[in-house]
Length: 307
Image (tube, rainbow, N blue to C red; front, side):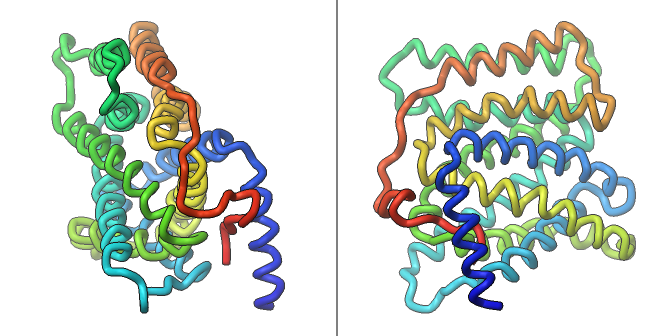
């Protein structure tokens, strides 16, 4: 059985290594949005924070079953980096689910996207590239329509918090991906994320959990965090953080599409224009290039999804 599992992991790793890095990022986006839309069904019984905790806990169990992390002998700096990524992931997930409980999913993701967009342009010496965040901000204002007077300010605050976490997540994931092989880093970060989310999530969900919710959460955990976080980690090993951040330009549009299909959250023509502005800003900020890593190239040393 161990040989079969190792052979399967090696095959999956080689397949992922041959796939274009951008395709891994796109598949991760789709998985995130479908998983997010599916999570809303749990809000009525265990709340947004309870859902974040339960989903991350299910993901932690799955990651630990797939790969037990090796902590002994590792530099303290590496472990602290993984813990920091886990704490960021827990806060980001909780903030995002709290946001989509209050505002449409496409709008929440568009606001969150300001975080990755800033990662993409920060430190640039080309002043014209700084216009893209301004365009994206204009698009967000059109999406939220503050002049209508029906803005859920708390929902927007949660989305901004999620965007801040998303920006930090991109940077830390690149660092952790350089220092941990396969799923080993995620087998540390996701349990930490579950503990962080549980600070608010456990009291909110306590007394309302049913076995059906637990089983449903296991399915959601495959869609988010197991599949997308694994794909993003692999993608970030082969892309610069700026390129990866701006590939996320498609995420607001994908969220709006999934929101319309699964949640009947249809945007107005004006809001579609705002969404287009956000996407154009992301695409405009794209910077070509791949990142140099301290590891051997993926073509020589395949990175397994499962070990």
